[in-house]
Image 1 (cartoon, helix red, strand yellow):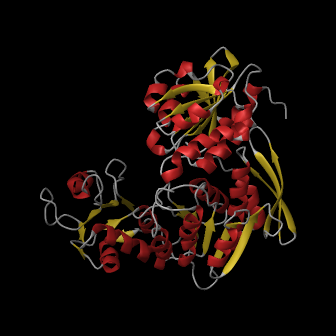
Image 2 (cartoon, rainbow, N blue to C red):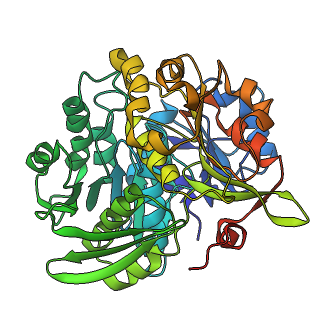
Length: 479
């Protein structure tokens, strides 16, 4: 069955279909477009109308446009609307309206994408799940994710992000949420918000999208702003965390080198779960995700067991052993790829993970390579400098820094821990052997615009990456 026909799409958008075409998907990028998809000609850096002819040549079923491009025949399969983004939004709303899926929305300063993937993993064995493959969480990403949702979806997971005030509420209302989860509220986007309280108010706007019948808010119960979030929740609300007041109570955390084992309870029912990544922050998000699953009607036991199959997405805490010598499996680098994004809370959590890691060689070091944290506003320099006072730094051997903001951290570090500093990641990526040694455990983290993935690639290219599941073979771990 097709996802959209020209007739259905025209009815949803109020536009005009030049023929009753049939599309089995929705795309906004000709580079990844698959034959049979509807191409949406959004305007961004480039005008998507410039690529309509290319999309049709690649086999697009049709194109959503505001006018017929000069290089496209008038009888081409098109859906013509007044505004392309508004047309995409209308498709998203129509897709939501025609499905009986339980829809979970996820927002937070840290952990949105990881939590979305946890939910996908846990729910996949309990029904048909729809979620974006990437971090499509903005003003075009949310309607795109909704527009791609099949009618017979059982569970949908919608990631909702923001950079400025007023962004979350309209996206949440568009998604018509059955469950709304906030992972954490932390310093991020302070360039656009005056305080943590301002960020909390914006995050709490996700509750404005909750369905009036049975809508459930899932919030972190251990935050300074928890009471603010509770007051903002209009209907049912459940907390997760180590606080004794939390309905979903995290009773015990047992960290290991490669996973985090947890004991928790819900309304007096005890259960165990495991997250395949070290770190209390992953355990907390895992518990919140379990709570969201149950609120959406999923089974607690099945969800908790399935969570053990989740793996961190690329750039968000993935761990690899970089084998440096093909004849010696124990000679290598333990690499934590957390290069996708960064703010003070996520950097602190990542440094704690690195501090708790045993390097693969007794002489190995714990090395952090950190890039600028962006959008932190007036206190950006102070927030970078403050990393030097983190307890985790005490057990690290060296910290390399990238970017003008991280210069504040570099200058604040004790001399013996002060590594290299460079303006750009490309400068450090050009000399990976100066950054790490055989036997080191290494963390790479920074805001996306800092392109810290260049350093991840440079370190990885020193040898051959071994999947995380095989790391025990290289570290002498005998558990």
